[in-house]
Image (cartoon, rainbow, N blue to C red):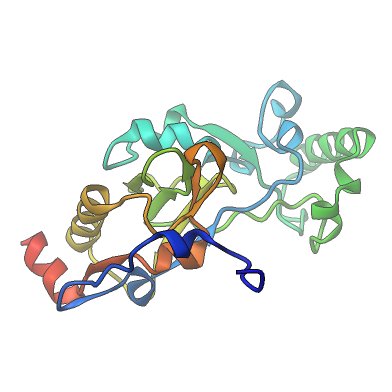
Amino acid sequence: MAAETRWTHFTRKPRDAPQDYIELGELCRVHRGQVTGANRIWIAGLHSAELPERTLVPTVTKALELFRAGPELTDIGSLKRVVDLPTDLSGFSDHEQIEIYRFVSWAVEVGACESAVAKDRRSWWSVGLREPAPILATYMARRPPAFVLNPGKARHINIAHGLYPREVLGTPILKALVSFLRQSATTQGGRVYSGGLTKFEPREMERLPIPGPKMLLEMAS
């Protein structure tokens, strides 16, 4: 035990997946959302009100938004926006650039460029949100993960995981996958912390057993 970095697996009996099941990771890559480095700066508010609308991206910023959404996140209008500036600002009009530079100057004053996350970026002012994930999932709670279809193409920060199919999957199969995961997901397979808090790292979520593509297609029909 002294040589182990994780002890949770000592207390759990391994699950044998039914025949024709695969691991989720064989069908989808799981990626945690982008880290902003300073939510008070990069989550839009009065301080970013003058920025061009196209730089303010509807984004899941709280796990509660996914728990409340049900099987599909359809109302992205109620989500907060994240300021997601490109690394190259030359594509904006003169007026837009003035507002962007004003925002960036304020961000410098409040230390946004000094965080370890910002320093590690290609351009410190560019959060670089991932492409919208077809399926979003919570990964830390005192309950099983919530899996939610994302037809509105909301982005997500690091309070959620995004499931990205390795091959193009039609909406019926995606719905069947979400339905199965919502019904079958438990806290088993995650890392358990004090008080029953369970966390799923991306690779741990990828090990969840799911029906193979043929079975999902049958479930979708």
